[in-house]
Length: 330
Image (cartoon, rainbow, N blue to C red; front, side, top):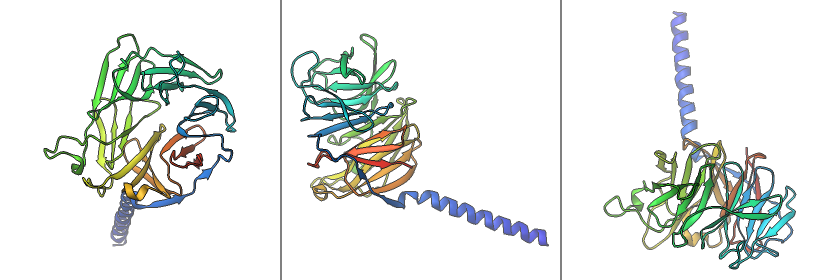
């Protein structure tokens, strides 16, 4: 008889433990933790930062659009400027517009002139640029270079039908594309297939393998793919609806490490974001599970991850004081 009751007792304990564990896992998205960002820039040497990338060797590269002596800044670990280069013009190392940054699979930093479809590799030690054989006609619209592998360029083309395109690095290399789809019915057309055309996509590549994550300016969705098939695609909260008379903002930035995906989320009407005081940092694993929902005390529109030191850096180009913020990641 005693063994019977002990068996029933253990069974009840097991059921309760399973129930608690399941609830804890399913409710993690609802648990919001609050964290404060540290302002690490006190000296006003940035005029109008628009992009920033943390490199694997501790250096930082920033596009500072009105920067003195050049708008490409290479900084050391103490945030001292090592190199300033880049100017507008028609010369071989000059840019027709302010460029964007990307990091290759091997840690190489790339600088992209989107108006002329010119791609450069950046030598961090010498502070010099070398043009790549990125053979895309100037008439083609390329929004951003997402990543560069040993064999391929991965970029976001213009328009809304394609999430990204891969092109082999050899001369006249073959191209392949991954089509964009939208899951939330509120953002589909009347025929439930046509997608709204106005949302910007924010895309990141997992550093160690061919896996990509995308979030959207107006869709509260996360999409993960290996470049061939969709591995995860879900509406996250379901309360961000399309209204023809209003504009709702979902995400404004994304970055990743081999372990996690980091995305900046607002989930508010654009009229509420004229002077935002905070935002949320959503942390996912590469299976799409939401691990953390962090309320930050300053708004961010751009982030980059220093994976070696476990630090996220970010800024908001709308802030006239041009602060750079830092958050130590768990």
